[in-house]
Length: 283
Image (tube, rainbow, N blue to C red; front, side, top):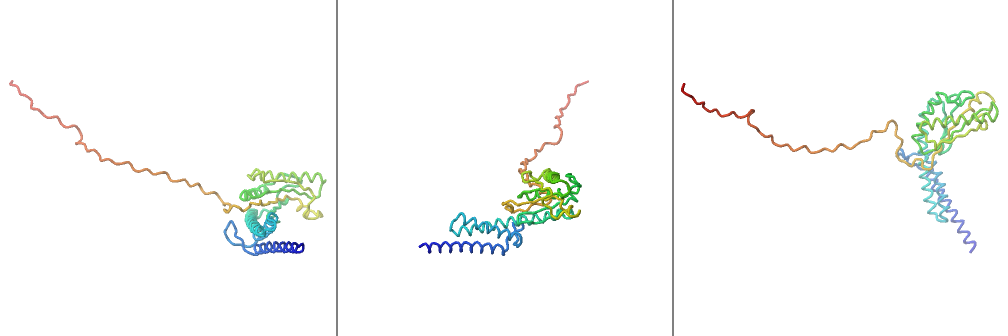
């Protein structure tokens, strides 16, 4: 009896894994529908669908016990969410790259639901300064415009420095630079609730601080844009340009007033008085 029960559990577990992997494989290799264009496509959205399917399938079995049906539904639901998030971030990445072309800001997709912007010191701040340059302000105008078109995300702003100066000084400077960028975005209609900021000082260099060229690249501000779980839920893409004017209903038309026949009058003037003969008297 014990052996039979154990065998059934092992078999059920294997079936569960096979089901989840099968659904995930299908979603990874098959096309997904872009919620913005309605087209079938393969790419980051499909990867997101596969990742969502694995997580959704695991959730379905966790709450459904041995019910493999729950695993299947969980995998499919997770795949749909992952596809929507992937498509959402695909479009945001493209919009950001087009908007920042020629500015020197690097745009990278570091994870399925994360977009990373790297702003080098050459266009952001002067040496030993946290005041944004005019070039940085122009670039951040473009960044804020795209962020406002794609509001289903959070933005973490992180400041970095090179190794010149003390650790405490560099830490403070990195925090001030992150605050400058976050404040500028907030002043350009990016919801402050979406923004967070931090300074890393000199602790996370991209390159060894062995020469000035490397140090210049280590002096930077990074924006990590992370999609929310409901990103891509809306089916309509953000509108470019100015919104169309609201259409108002036409004014109600009323029937024309009834026309009455014109009253005819006699010829102008009053009728002449009758002429009476004047009496004649003898002279």
